[in-house]
Image (cartoon, rainbow, N blue to C red; front, top):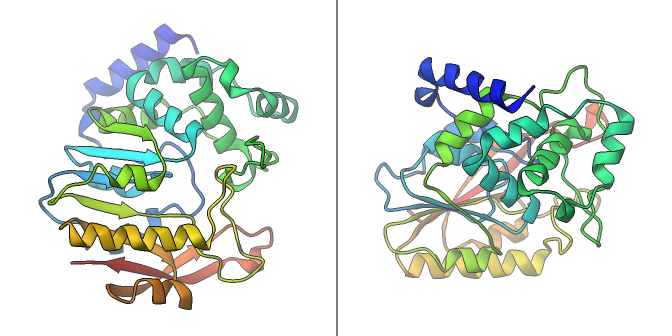
Amino acid sequence: MPALLLRQTASALRSQQLPDERATPFIKWVGGKASLLPELLKHVPGKLRRYHEPFVGGGALFFAVQPRRAILCDNNAELVIAYQQVRDNPYGVLDILAQHVYDQAHFTAVRALDPRALTEAGRAARFIYLNKTCFNGLWRVNRAGRFNVPIGRYKNPAFHNPTTVVRASNALRGTQVLHLPFEKSLEKTAPGDFVYLDPPYDPVSLTASFASYTASGFNFEDQKRLAWACTALNRRGVRFLLSNSATPRIRELYKAFEQRTVKAPRSINCKAGGRGHVDELLVFNA
């Protein structure tokens, strides 16, 4: 679809009060929180100075809250660029997405591209295309940082969706989106702010570990560093909500704070019998 037509389509959507419609995530993400939103929203204060997400992922809670002021961060550079471009250049991203097709050969060729050789809009479009067409929307990279997930089995994956992208762009307007590790992100918080933390989860078993969103991974030492950071937030008068696996060692790390166990769907499993609902832990300080 030509860029001019995409702009006309977006203009028509705006004339139908598109900005008044609630934005939703423009990507899929392992551990996405759409199903847990009713529980998470119970812990978001009605008035907050600024909203923070150091592990933004799909951003389901951000899009549900749509705060006036926000800082979104992640340690995945490709994800951050996708957010920045959807915010700043949605029609350029859509124009490139329209050139992609759902096909094994095309998928393999796009996956093999070095994203650093692309334009920023092309890099964002590549990320969205691969995310929407790969197996289970799983973003996994090897130690060299190269995306290595195979193509998924879909009838008609919706990787080019002007309505979703334009609504997300409207919601992101004025929001800072930064490529930072969580500790650097949390340095930007102040009393009266609210932080939602959704890190890679502590594995519930030796075979259930998945933290390869970036080449560096996320291990239990990182989990301990995050718990210390939450203690520092509490001391500074910053409200936070954290979600993680309801494992004994995560419960122990956060024993000084309020905890709730909730049921969440588990979908990342190659066998349907391995999917279902699992316990997740919500940790909060107010």
